Image 1 (cartoon, rainbow, N blue to C red):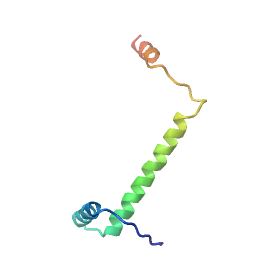
Image 2 (image 1 turned 30 degrees about the horizontal axis):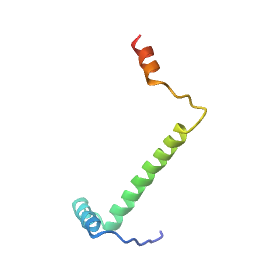
Image 3 (image 1 turned 180 degrees about the vertical axis):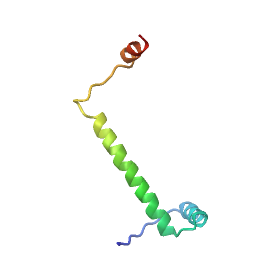
Length: 71
């Protein structure tokens, strides 16, 4: 496993330490899990943006869709 270092504001370190204490985990465990969650969300958001920018994907007009749904 590789090791990295980062500079964080004191307020973020305090919040990290508080979370680690409440979770009975180390700072490293909390950071690792936070990065994993972030990257999972980032991947999902990136895929969503790709789909939204797909020119082959039709764009629906809200008024037309609403009219069709309320018929």
